[in-house]
Image 1 (tube, rainbow, N blue to C red):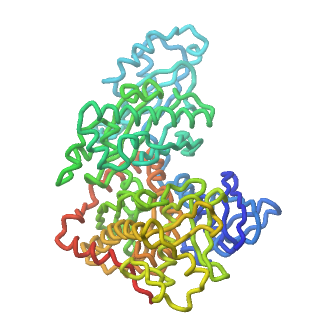
Image 2: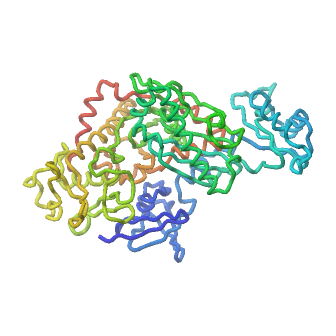
Image 3: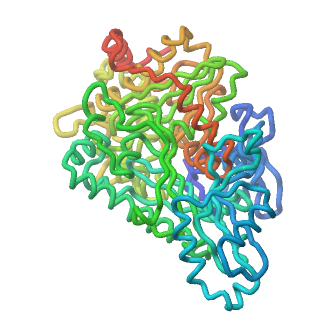
Length: 610
């Protein structure tokens, strides 16, 4: 089967993909999530893209790849980008960030007169307690005869969300945190940060427009002290180690924020708020809170509350008056990233049929909504789906097999990241491979490789020849026969996959049972997270990772946590909704339920051939 090169603009992302794949699938492999209200079934036309050459408009779900292409993806066709800019499909959050800058023209010689003028002009209730001592010093030390000061001064204000609006105090209340010379009111930026166990993503946003101006991402350096949350909890048990982990993530944020600021050509001193989401362990390590209790039953968080800190006190290199805000957590293993994802996906909207949000990762998170009731659970899938524990497993990197499919020549074909020779297999390729082996009968429902004599005669010889022995155990060769270092999937790899998929599948089943909802009545499953973008829905269902529902009910929502973080950064109303969501969601401890072991054991089995 031939492979072609696709370039997606204006992102300038290049991928290699097999002939016959849809542009919708190709965009997903490039990390671009298109709007597909119909589930990619070719009915709504919301996934339209354009060919760069000629400008022909195409439906991405209906168009197959037959040649090298350069494709332009418009803003209106991007799912989560649309949510960030419009603050949610079918809903509207006003652009109202907690930080404001107000320019007051004139020459000011005293803080009292300046504040009174500011209060009268903006009709706000101004608080001067706390950090305003720094403001007074800055104001007093500023040479008022400078050209900038002769034009006026700019006040940096932070909303006091806890201040109620009453008849006695109907005005919105703000805290004066700094005064800057001249008119800097248009230079107000913030950073929405998603701190993952493996990866950290920073979206730098213009808070006057609500738009993303730059994005940067990098590996979480805490991984040097443990690949998963449990190992980091154990490492942080020593107080000095907790400080070390906090310092490493702070330095990581400084580097990524600096990269984004340089890309957007703005000074870091124009960034006034960092809003961070992450799982509960990442939240605690960022704030240097005790984490030992997270590793012991009943796995309770030290704090589930939102937190606001002075950024400079933590060593974050942004504006002197800059703040760090962390969103509320739900439970010990369901954090603020799940809250942000639920907000981005509209899980707080009580109308509509049952919806399940699934974030697949080392620690999978689930949120189920039925009417006005929300449940959340976590499932310890382990790192197999991210490549760990798989003989040739890896993350989604150059040389990794990311797609496995049957071709027209009675053999398998593979898509390799970077278009190079296959050297490993990442999670999406692993799910594809397992699904195909099950469909062909090469692997049975128990997860064992079938004896060659038991494989159906309809299976082509080109496929059975891929059955090999590797280090004394049955295996299936995925790479080409001429490959000097073949990539194989072993019996042990299948067992590792079974453990991971059983944890997620059991979590979904038990959460639905908690709500007395048969799984087939789920109207929609929304797959979140970077990994979820690349999964073939058919393969996930065939391998038993997801319930057996029609694939058009399974939707990709991309980095929903990042989108939710951007919403809460730019809208106080969204921040209030996030707080309400965290408090309203009922946490279900799946692993402690009496039927967990039985359900988990059942879910270890693969679905039988139909």
